[in-house]
Length: 127
Image (cartoon, rainbow, N blue to C red; front, side, top):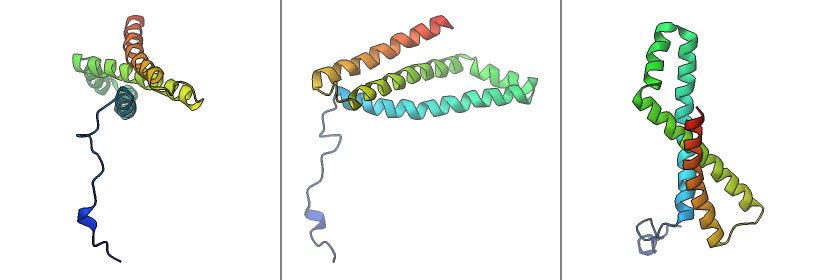
């Protein structure tokens, strides 16, 4: 039977009504960094395939990857990798039932943000 009252039902809250919280933003960023790392992985595979294809093709792709734009993309990829890894550790802690109160969850969110930036700088220095 058709729903005759379809247009009169209330709508659920949307992003314009919902106030973003640190936990929601960090969760969304974990998903974004996971997808962005796929793009970086494709670039690395492309670079490896170019190395196997020949010197001329490799020189072209290596020039792209080692350019300023390539360095920026790879640095952001390392940042995304650390952020995603720390987000995974946070979820492992949450899976044990710990850290679910708002104060601890916020501290863990800030720890992810600050930790990923610090670990990215350490990675850049180490390389």
